[in-house]
Every structure is written in C-alpha cells, then in structure tokens.
Length: 462
Ligand SMILES: Cc1ncc(COP(=O)(O)O)c(C=O)c1O
Image (cartoon, rainbow, N blue to C red; front, top):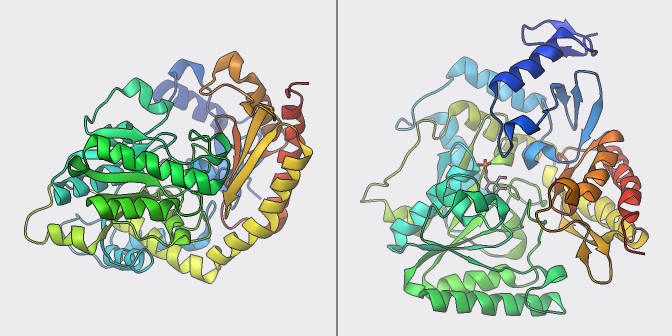
C-alpha cells in the first residue's frame, strides 16, 4: 500500500525520496514564508495528513495538538468535507459575488441561525484578517465614528487595520497603519494588571479601566470595541464572570458596536458554535474564519446585526472581494454544519474538555513546579510555564527569541521528538487538537506533554 501520493498522482513510500528533495528545494528556492527571516528557516516537508495526524516524507508521524493554525477543527481529509468540495467543483466551481448562489446562501443562512439573536446577514471574506477589516469598516460607517478600541494580548490578523488592532509583538514592526486604533488592557487574573485577587475583582476593575478609556477617548468618537471572545494565541484567556456582559453594557451605554472576533474560538473550539454563546451576550458583529470549513478552502466572514445591515439598506456598502462567498469554500462550510451535527462535535468537545482535559491538566499543575497555571475551555487550553511558581516569573521573558527562548524551545522539542506537534506560544504550551480527536489520542497527547514538562521543571529556580 502506498504511504502517500505525490504531486503527479503516483504512489510513493516514505523514505529519503527524490520527491522530498524536490519539495524542500522548491520551497527554499521559491516560497516566501510568513513571519520569518527567509534564510533562517527550514520548513518541514509534509507528505500526508489524515484525521488528527500528519507525516513527513521520512514517515515520522505527528499527533497534531495545534490543529495546524487552530483551523483544522475536523481534522485532515475528512471524507464529508472532501466530498462536498469535489461535488461543488463538479457542479459550479466558482461564480462572482454579485450573483446569487445556492451554496453561498445556504451557508449564510446556517451561520445566521447559529450565531446570535438579532443576527441578520453574513458578508464573506477570504480569511480572518479581512473579516476584521470589514467588520471595522461596517461599524465605522454605521456609527459615523472612527476610533476602535482593542485589547493588548490580542491577535486580529496582519492586514492594515487588523495588525494595528493586534495587541502583541507581531504589530511592533508594522507601524500604526490605522490612526483610529486605541489599545486597552483586558482581564488576565493570573497576571492581573489591576492587582485583583479574585476573578470577580478582575472583572470589576478591568471594566472600570475600560470605562475610563472610553471616557478619556471621547465616547462619541468610538465606533467599536473589538475583542476575542476567548483570547487565542495570546494565552487562552477565558473572560472572568461578568466581563463580556460588562463590555456589552458599556457598548450599549455609549452607542459603541461590540465586535467579537471568533476567528480562532468559533466553530466548536470551546464547545459552542461561537465562544460568546457561553457568556449570554449578543454582539453587533462577529468575525469568523478557520473552523468554518477547517481551512480546506480559504473562507472567513462577518455576521452582521439587523441594525447594521439596515444601515446599508438604502446606501451602498463601500467594499467587496472577488472571492466573497466562493462556492468551493461555502460548500465545505455547509458540510461543516452537517458534520458537526452528525458527529455531535459540540457535545464531544464539552465532554472531552471537562472530563478528560481539565482534570489531567490540573493534575499536571499539581505535579510540575514549572506549571504556573492551566486554564481553558472545550478543546482550547493553555499550560503557562514559569521559572518561579512563587513570583510567577515566566519560564522565558516576554517575546524572547534565540538563547533567551532556549528553555521553552527544549520543552517544545521534547514534545516533537515524542511525536506530538504542540501549539506553542510565548511561555505556554497550548492544547488545541482537532475536535474529532478520540479520547485515546487525546490522552496519548496529554501523556507526551506531561513527560515534556519534566524538561520545563529542570529550569525551575531551586
Ligand atoms: C482571533 C484571530 N483573529 C484574526 C486572525 C487572522 O486570521 P487570518 O490569518 O485568516 O487572516 C487570527 C489568526 O490566527 C486570529 O486568531
């Protein structure tokens, strides 16, 4: 039996093949990679993916606890997704966005029905960053205001406004491309900027800080507040009790649009269609991408409230994309809804998160001195590593690189050499496997992390 199928459709076996050499050579010669010094990288050539696993050309197998970039919610080569794309390609591979299309309309309907009370329509984009760009543009036109408030410790994408909204180092070298962006500090009980001692205090003080920011910036100048409902790459920060409802109340008080960025947290990651649904709030705009079709074909979008939709009933919306609502992408999106229901994905995620992941991570926190805190929900967790559990000094400094990042890199290397591809961010191992993962694979992956934490323990101050 073939190990994998090559570019020419030929069956191949794992090993040091010509195919591998060619993949590597073409990549190094011709592909320009994201977020990298081109001369300093050596991307791993991947021969195939199946479910929660992928393989390099030598046949090394990895259990993917990162779902690629937290997009592969239904795993590699899900037969339902592959068939939906193949069928759509045979039926109508593409059609421009000004025309009405069956699969595009069907997906928009399902998203609206599963999002929030008062949702009216969907504008489709090619991914997450442009979803954020369009949500902000809609809020600005709707309110006639220019400023947008965003949090530190956030990622919203790498295009102009989205990277300016981003509240972490990936923005630093990109300047300030959007003069209307203002940053504020959100809740993070483990490292409270507000000297809070309880999650409730953190909520109260973070909301007081947000109110003050709004008042000092001028409430009548602020179009929107954007926030990840559950912060993803910047730490799996689940909002403490009452925080999202408090943001909603401030938005209502000052006529500000609330944008929930669900690009990473949406489509089942937290055990809900959208992460905000666990907190009993209804935003005005929701951005999504990644999990909407597991990234099989690029797709993102904005869910739009009745009121904002109505703003553009008479006047034209100034924006568009050639591939808005691409049929291949939308077919995979519709199939995603069907698969979620058939395989009871949301129920599985909630069950595995609470019954398997939470207790196991809590046990790791008790066992390993290097674990400062574990936190999360569904299949979306962070293990925050520290050098000193008393002072909470992180295992490596903020934004560390090179030698300074060596202790954390050693933990990541231990995971990889044991066959686990972790979601590594800052001083955290984050747990975000495909949502179809079996209980046995989940436990096997957690076992590998548990063992790798011995490496982190070696760096804890005596
Ligand atoms: C919360 C959030 N918003 C926006 C984006 C940007 O999405 P994309 O990379 O598809 O542009 C990401 C990507 O990781 C994200 O996590």
